[in-house]
Image 1 (tube, rainbow, N blue to C red):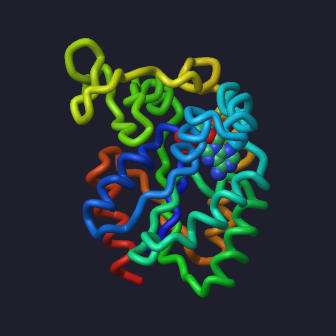
Image 2 (image 1 turned 45 degrees about the horizontal axis):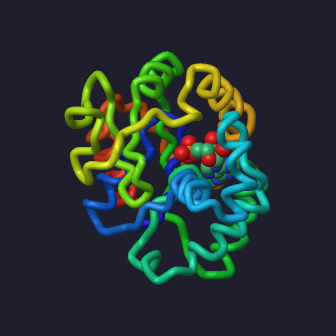
Length: 216
Ligand code: AMP
């Protein structure tokens, strides 16, 4: 399937993307993961992105479009893709539309995962992420803790709290989401592509998306 996962930070886009990948082999493309990999590798892109990311702000549209222009043409995208954390602004959505038209690719739908702010705040402050950029398994100190000594159960690397998951940075990210990204719901609704999902569990969201794609 070819879908955009829309939803505030902590709405569960990454978790649902992993379930969808297991479901039909579509590849998860997370701009946040790509940027964190670049920061860790110390590339020019990473150096430019780091300050924006740590403060909870957005990386400039042009940098993101350069990344995505290349990523969407890679071979693994032929099986389908799940865009997680992209597009994040109206200019990114416009540029994506043009890019997909040129590549002759049609999206199945835009899934808007709608979760209340208090639930998100609780989820993000208790979230932990595997520090290995090739793994990035997600844990939750309450509902899904890592192994003894804060180690990843999958790869054994240290599990950490992201710099942008402090209460201050999270509040900023949610404000940025409401201002810059939430308008994309209306944008895609006008195009008849939006499916808004209010399910609390990842399995419920997965089912709603699979049903939504099958109904097309
Ligand atoms: P995420 O893991 O998707 O929450 O992304 C983490 C951070 O990476 C965001 O807070 C932004 O600073 C940056 N980022 C990720 N995707 C985008 C995007 N599409 N546009 C701009 N900044 C992005």
